[in-house]
Image 1 (cartoon, helix red, strand yellow):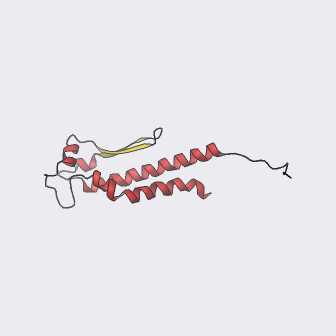
Image 2: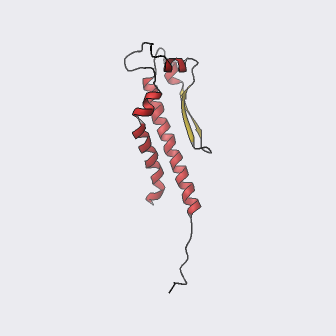
Image 3: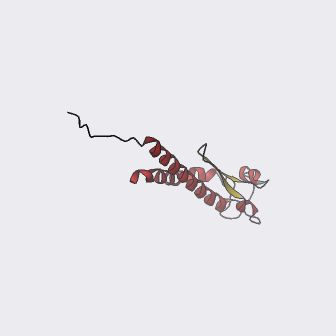
Length: 118
């Protein structure tokens, strides 16, 4: 027999909102990590390029973008013939997207799981 006093309360919308918010926070952390690693690899003449790095966030679309806004940023990134100081390089943004992928995924997963830790 069914228990007539049993009431099921559904909080699915709140749970989904919490998961979405936490996932976006993780995505922001991953973007900040990528920015730090990329800035460390960015070619350095006077430091303008590495200081120009920033993050764009759009929570409605669930998107985070890391970018460098100097007019020469794309040329420095793409031209493999340029010589750079030790520890600096072309592909300073592209390479860490691969080498830091596991770290960035872990940051997102950790943040996304926080609402479920209850």
